[in-house]
Length: 238
Length: 238
DNA sequence: CAGGTTAGGATTGTGCATAATGCAGAGGTA
DNA sequence: TACCTCTGCATTATGCACAATCCTAACCTG
Image 1 (cartoon, rainbow over the protein chains, first blue to last red):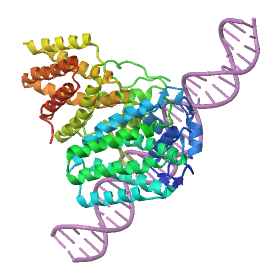
Image 2 (image 1 turned 45 degrees about the vertical axis):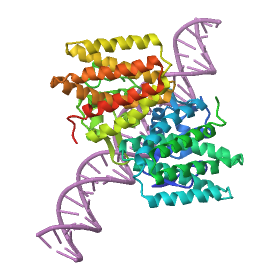
Image 3 (image 1 turned 90 degrees about the vertical axis):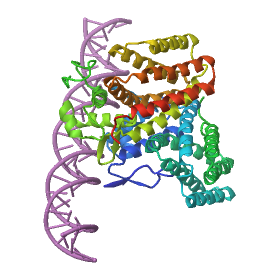
Image 4 (image 1 turned 90 degrees about the horizontal axis):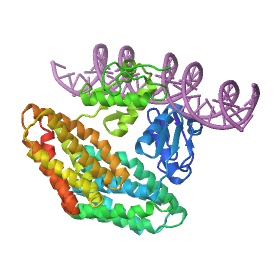
């Protein structure tokens, strides 16, 4: 059986069918997205039965997703009492991003000189297209988002350290939730300046990688992540 | 119902009765203990049915415990295939240590100037005692081990970033497994040179922290972790 | 009004049904 | 013969409905 759940929410997931063996991951991602979008507010009690009805899956995947999110630190799990959403403050985003910066800069350093030039040039061209694009439609956002993921994934996969790549992958769950939530907000505000800014930062990383400059590449990545923090944390409680 | 599980294993848990709502936690702790005792070797497949029979618990708490341990990073959970204990080869030690270095250096930078001087001086004195000690008895090893943990924990807890501290804590489980294993081997080999070497490195970190030099402290920490790699990876499968 | 009691809802745990995976061996092809 | 593909079976993970347990809070009762 394969079943569709949730008509709304993150664009990357919308309209997808979720099959056997992927329920837990999907529920976790949907919950994360809801939390960062503010649909699930801090302190709110997460009732398993409600969630299972809403997502059209049974309670087991829900509970496993909750256990997983507890490990991420975004919800608290009180024995025999259930799960409550923890407050996500700007300081949390900052903290997560510090860790992200440490890991992704290390990965960037190591990936330098290990990625095929053809691929890098292709990415650079794509970012330039994004920069010069005028329309800020839904598909534009999706495209930008996909490129963002592609660059970061490429670096992680090319760093020659599978463990590091795996750790970045673990955190990706959080990053993506931050990113998607803030991009939704930004789009609603018609605040599109950040898109070209972000494309600039990405381009700087790619060009440094093409040039083969370790120091420059890691510095560009560091700037990129630093710049992201203030946008991601906008609209969150202090 | 309350039921006793597992006659053997960790002293703190032996003979305890495990009640409703505590199964997952207990299973997770028992599994962790078994992994570090070497009863469960790296790469080994963890079969849910076997575990549920062995622990006299049904499959749900087992699976939740596995999800939890996956979050800790000590096992891999492949969808539709199950859980395996993470393989640790020499290359992995190197990889894990790269990640560790990135995180702990960041923590050291941030902890600089945030730790009470009194505590630092006390630690420095302890490391000097270790350096000058002649006897390499079991209690000596325990003492050195405890000091090692104390320094690293102190830095993580003082870095002002709870998320970073949590990530380091996660990796600590892995580090500790490396460290204990390699120290056992070293003790057996009567190769005690590393102990004073390590005390030197620790001392350098502490003194840099006392001096309040961010750069010097993080560099000392970097050297310390780098130096550890070749000792930790000795005697592991390639 | 205090203290015990009970009913309702929620979590937790169990056993079973189902789906996915991997392996072994048959059969085909070069 | 060596190699690849495919099929069927055994094993295992996954998901679900039900039962047991726990927590809360309203409700008696003296």
